[in-house]
Length: 63
Length: 401
Image (cartoon, rainbow over all chains, first blue to last red; front, top):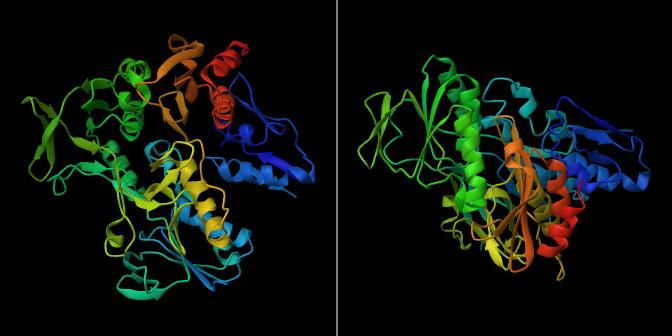
């Protein structure tokens, strides 16, 4: 699976960073960086939670 | 085994509950009733970038029609629940009786109104998409004097949006500093400064006597006799949970539907979102939240709770979190702050326009606020979840570059 972030929608609320800090990081410049674009299958539930809890619905998973 | 679960309320909590029921493998009927005619939509942009016209309507959608079909959700819009009888497990929707095996109450809250202002044109509250469209049209009609009653988060966001559109904005607030009952005086003053430096006229420590006008609003009369002229008035004085339909239900209602620590209101009935008041074990008291994140999470939790009715269900005890966008600032708060808390700015400074501040009492870290500092808010939110002490929070802060 691949993590896709729509950066036009992302407002760096950083909720995803709290749920999956190994995949998402909001840095000091306030921008979101995807640290792991193709996470392993055991990270799926955290990734799905990040998708659901993003207030901007900016994250999606591509299979 | 239940054959049907009914969800009353088709906004964020209700939708998330429906999705969760299917994700958890529930195979029975899911009936979802929404009072509004509109297909389910997201509310935060209604005071922000939907209000200023930047965001198109399609972007507000909470769930696609394909998804509703795929999940086999029986969605009925324009369907208001008018009664519930817990004993016979029967609902009344638009006067028609409906039985259920399991019930999720997610009827949300509505904007509180000022008395006797309903008939005056140009007086608005903001809760629905139609409210937002009406206010936007009024903004664009050349009526430039906007008066906002209440400097809470909605009032502050609308003030920011209106001011960015070039309108003349006056905000009226009863407290001497906006938001100080939640954020304390220091942070309230920072937010107040943000508005005044952006040209908003902030009038604090005043009380509204009445809205004046014949057919159309002319102004807002204060209790001290001052008349503030207005072409358009937006009232942002809080929200009231939608519980009237439950008055004869047998459920306990007290500023929300009262639930136990697992969001259970009665056997086979859970509540979620703005309408739910539940016992939060972490805070040792019952609370009700009106946050986007809570509506989503509690919707999910309540659906799981209904499906897994076991003796040892984990309590629903999240650290609350919300955000507010005002001018070019993203304000985020995690935890529950109180004006009596100790408060310390731990990263940067308010003068720089971005900072992180923490709230604590009795030696514990209680809340974190960030203005354009989302990274740190989430880091401190994790510390709050761990039950960190004030000292540990300060130590962590000293390690931040």
